[in-house]
Image (cartoon, rainbow, N blue to C red; front, side):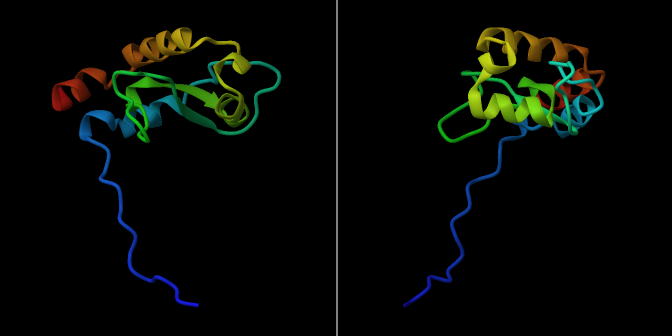
Length: 113
């Protein structure tokens, strides 16, 4: 049997306007957006649906994230937003609120337009 050892074609990197690593790091310092007795695990940045920044086989822009513990992030990923008590619209509104609260937003937007 022959094994193809050629390097795989890599997808291009995400465009700069979609990447806000410092924002995601800031989110990881917040409480879980769904805080309750069933929260557990580290806080992660959960991407919310955004048709304006999401394309086929691409992740939404980082400005569309909300903080979620590992339990709620996994629940949302597997079962959808209704499993964590949100609609797609309320999740997007929540992400917008967190984005506006981020202290580094003005500098990031000035750099990335």
